[in-house]
Image: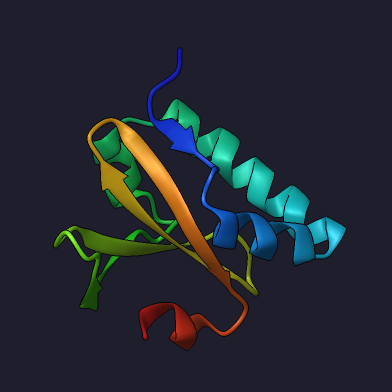
Length: 99
């Protein structure tokens, strides 16, 4: 069963992903596999992923942005667009994910 549909097509996200060290890429892929099996409600409340709204930023169209943890070192920024989980950027500095 596929729960959440994941979009990896953002060019900035792809650059960030390919710049990761292999162990961080593997941690990210493992997290995406987990997310894919969840419902949206489960994603919002999962203690390991730590899904959080970024209150200081929105997209140009007014969509809320979110951050989640995929390793001890990294957070990712994403948005929910209908049934899709769209990846935007990756951040080694957790605070920079919120700026």
